[in-house]
Length: 313
Image 1: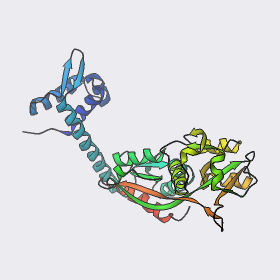
Image 2: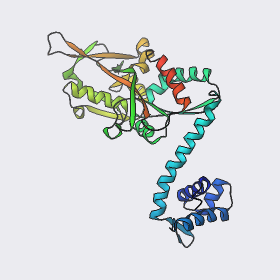
Image 3: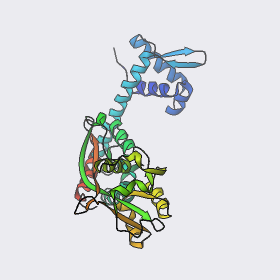
Image 4: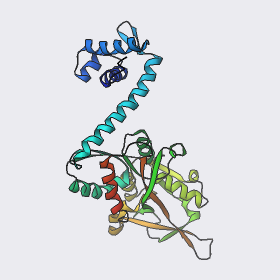
């Protein structure tokens, strides 16, 4: 028995994704009879039906679903192997797929990518910005070679992802000029629930940091009067700067606004303590990668850039 070939598997996965022989043929730039022949050969060789033919439509069978899952794993590994072989040219060409939390990606990562491109100009860097939850999930499934996030990793991903602290991020409680707190240097814990708040969406690293800080201070996050929930810290900053509520925003994002005094950073204190203890919100920035997936030379080269600048926050 000759066994299945990679070409057959590529044909099969295209048919399984499109559930259409003609569309699979168009994607692969081959004829429809060639697609049909590849599927029929697989079915005959292993004595199973991979697709039900129902009139002009097809449906994938249980055997087909099993082969689809395993085929995707095989093709993913082949792609990684091909990447590794291509990189035996002293990192002159290839791809790097990064996933990054929004603040890190907008304010910290560009300089690192620039240094990497100066050293390896032939490498194509693809960077996706999303919230921490999405980056963790994408790194676990292989969508990203590396993930950079602030926030917690779900317990379900702990055994899949390797994490390393490469820096830290500080959140500041800020208000705009028209807010009653703007002329004050500090606010007590008991006053936090007495103002409107603009928040990031659930799943963002910033929101995780704020909620954990509030809970550690003995405050239920649900007790806050949240008037707006936005999926971008830039939007949160703009809304607060225009005078709506208070917000927790990464320090990297508000340096210019604090210098221009369009925003004011408010210190949170515990007035019940004799020494007026102040509170800070600081979380580590994590570099994530899959524990078992093959790490390409390109990935390792970018990690070196990150490690050289790990203190530059």
